[in-house]
Every structure is written in structure tokens, then in C-alpha cells.
Amino acid sequence: MKNITVVGTGYVGLSNAVLFAFHHNVISLDIDATRVDLINKCISPIADEFIEKAFTESKLNLTATLDVEKAYKNADYIIVATPTNYDSETNYFDTSSIESVIEQILPINSTATIIIKSTIPVGYTAQLKEKFKTNQIVFSPEFLREGKALYDNLHPSRIIVGEKSERAEKIAQLYLNATVERTAPTLCMDATEAEAVKLFSNTYLAMRVAYFNELDTYCAKHDLSSLDIVRGVSLDPRIGEHYNNPSFGYGGYCLPKDAKQLLANYKDVPQNLIQAIIHSNKTRKQFIVKEILKKRPNIVGIYRLTMKAGSDNFRDSAIQDIIRELEEYNVQIQIYEPTLQQDKFENYMVNNDLNEFLSSSDVILANRMHRDLEEHQFKLYTRDLFGEN
Image 1 (tube, rainbow, N blue to C red):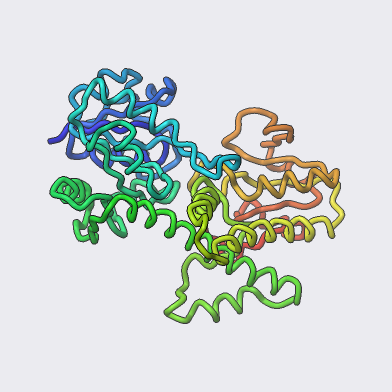
Image 2: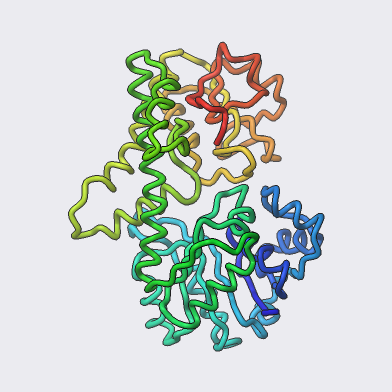
């Protein structure tokens, strides 16, 4: 058994902590006392059915703490999963949380292997090693879905470690041994290539979302059946029947910021497509707003800020940009979002009385269809074709 510390209790950090807590001694470190308390009570602070099930049905070797000394001192591996938001002024991820963590770790434990799971710019690991004069830092990208992060860790599509070394092989094996099937492909490559894999993967997914959204926009303008066309296109096995459900735009914590970071990394490199992916998302949202305004609503009801079922996270959800644009046209907004306990979100009214919300809205926007809305389809606006994420 290894001593593993995981820094951060978001969906990446907590899913990694639980993954290893089945077989190793794990400490979960966070700065949020409420989250630490919940974890120590075997209550998941995030919405993830597999994490919730693990807390209630499994014996986990997991302790959460606010104490950095306790967390780092005896660790063999320290997994860093802190947020790296995109800074539009610098065209760069805000990596200050990672550097702050490493500054804390090294005086306490200089021999632990530090595995970065946070998404970072291309070339960043090499910069970190130089800045901190240490060779203990390894980057290993994550490929997890919010709401199913533990499931994706237990059944990974691939395991990538950003180093070609015996140490990297051991890290890959550590992750592989924690999976259910133990058959996932493992790849060890230089750190910079591993960083690029992460950004190119998410930007491809953003491109795919943007493609089917533009297909849907075309159908809406020409009164064609999006459902028929998407089904016909997707039956080509080279395209596939996945990730093809139109939406209000790609959003969430990963795709928008990762595509922007990749575009920033393309400085001085010829490109058209990466820029177009980002512009396409903005165009889609503008189209959605115009379609809603055609209905001349006084009150627009927003059914859920979350992007998809099974998640309680609505950071950078596409619907928020649509809300802000609608406000510029003096449209009154009310939001139904059961995960919010307050009566305001930013400056917008939250109405969690579902019946009142449905009856008082002139138009109801739903990025994804739900049975709550079935009797109100006459004033429902959604681009959801398949009723799934």
C-alpha cells in the first residue's frame, strides 16, 4: 500500500482520492473546511453517483484534512488537482494554485512524486521543473466527465503519463491496477506531448459539439428535421452515434477554457480551425438568443443552470451567456435550479417552486429535456434531440 495525498476535492481530485482509497492509504487535502468535514462523514461534496455509492457501500482508506503538514509529510505520491481557470487577459491558464501547492510541498517532502492532474498549458511542466529546481514533478492528464468521474477512473479510455522513464511506468501501473478491467492502454510520453494530448482532445470534443450545433442551426433556419439528418449522418461508422446531440453551445469547466488555451499555444503557428471552433460557439449562442426573442417573451424561465444530468456544476455553462445576452434586451429572467439555496443568482431571480416557475414563464429554456417539462412543451425552447447528455 502506498501513501497518496490528493490536493483538491473537485470532481478530478475527489475521484482520484476515492479511486486509490480502495487499495491505498489516501489523504484528501482541501482549503474548504465544509468539504473536509463532509468527506470525513462519508458524504460526497459533489454530485457523482459512483462516488456517493463508494462512500456508502465501500470501506475506503480515506481521510480528509486542512493540515498541509499531515497531508504531505509521509506521502509517496502527491496528486495535484487544483483549478486552473483561463485568464482572458493573459491568454493563459491561471496556474497559481499549482505553484502555491508545490511551494508548500517541497519544504515538507522533497522526495514524493508530484503528479499534476490539473489541466495546464503546453510546455508548463518543463517550466515548473526549472522554476522549482526539482525533477519530482510529473504531468498525467485526466479524461473524466463531471458526474461520472469515478466511473471514468475505474474504466479509463487510456492512461497517459508525461514522462518516459521507469518512474512513469510505475505511475501508469499504479493507475492501471486501480481500474476494474486492468486492460486500458497506457502511454508514456514526454510531458509537453502529454499536455498537448489533453488540450487537443478537449478541443476536438468542442469541435464536434460545434459541428452538430451548426448542423442544427441550418435545420432550424430551413425548417428541416435535425433529428433525421443527425441520425443519417451519425450512422456512418467513421462518424458514430455519440456526442451528436445539439445544445445551446459547448460549455462547462473544461471545453471552453481548453480550446482557448490551445489557441493561445498556436501563437506563430498557422491555423484556421481552432479559432473557428471558438467563434462557432459564440455564433451558436447568438442564434439561440435571436430565436428566443422572436417569441417576444416578457419572462424567460431558465430550467437548470447545470449543463447535463447527474452534475451539480454549472461553471461556465452555455446558458449563462444566453441569460446575459437576453438581459440586454430587457427580458426578465427567472431561474429554476434546485442546487441553489439562495433566491438570487448573480442579479437574476431564482424560483425553485417548480409549478410557479413553469406557469409564470412565457418561454422556458432547457438545454436538456426533462419529464418536468412534458406538459409545457407549447412554451418550451430546447434543441435537445435525444433526451440525453
